[in-house]
Amino acid sequence: MRNRVGTGQRDAECNTAVVADERSDFRRLRANELVWSSDYLLDGRLGLQLWDGPGGFQARTFTKPVYRMRAATVSPTASTRPSRDKRNNR
Image 1 (cartoon, helix red, strand yellow):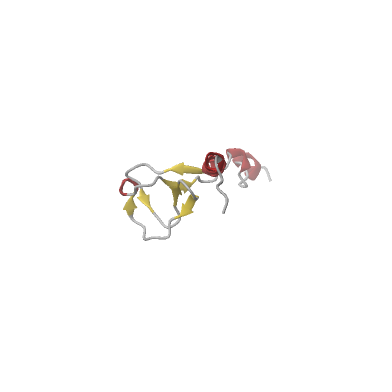
Image 2 (cartoon, one colour; image 1 turned 90 degrees about the vertical axis):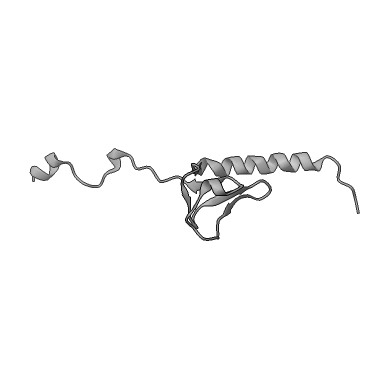
């Protein structure tokens, strides 16, 4: 069996980069927010892991940071409903 010296730091840097990319779509829960089954826990080795336990606990009770997917933002110009002017001018 070979001893791989010096690879631990490189592996840690790669994992950190992946976690940083994943977290751009997530927001960290505040301490008083409730954790649900659709939330994620940040594990230092595995990255974001889906919480598969029961919901209803406050985020402050967890030892690992808890994240939630950001809501999709819709621009006001992307509305499919016509404006009043267009509806009245038929």
